[in-house]
Image 1 (cartoon, rainbow, N blue to C red):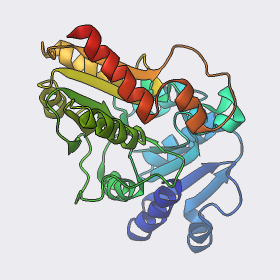
Image 2: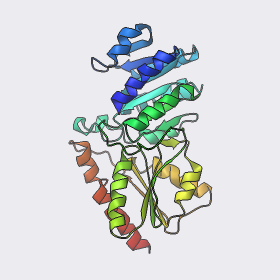
Image 3: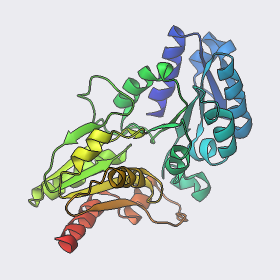
Image 4: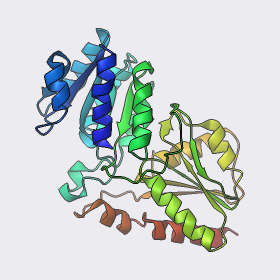
Length: 309
């Protein structure tokens, strides 16, 4: 997904002279083709995230569309004031490409985990927050980014994620992608968790629990109609690789509360508990520990149904 995203920056830059790339201490070889083909629009800075956000803001004020790339937690948590004051206050068209959202960097420990990135970016006025599920959706999404007039935070997965959105023809920011229907349960998920949601839904359907999946690649702005429609199921379950507080589950709950809409059996939010994950290991191992692999997701939903019926 990351390689597809960065390749799309180069492809877009060939067509649009306003597009520039700004990296922060990325490894050798990143976007080498763009670096050699258009060195005047390729910048590789050091470990100075606050600086490059200010730099990108300046470029945007001069008419450019900067695509800024580094590790997700460093492009959100470390330079939060610059995101608020330099970008969002001026509503500038800067694209923030965050590598390894969620638990992707589990081998490097808690300092590299982006587990509150959705919460803090969606709290900023003018900011758009997007988490594609796979490389094909990333391609469709990136194609529409040059014309979006606001800042965007783009949450990337690890790469090599299974393609689950292949039958979609285009991407509209703020539009949901219905993956399957269900009358008893509707799982609302985002990013790479939508594949796990589909697998959990298969397990529940096999047990006679009608379960559907709605993929929300855009967390802000939310697709109001899709969320309201999902609430017609008996139980709505939100699923995310993120703290339960402030992320997708909070956004969906707020929308339903504000709209005076509540499913018959309420809402269940599945995500990370309110603790810093201190274990090292793989992304899959940490997801397993939090009950966020398909079997754990299905078990949590089954327990919620048993308790609420």
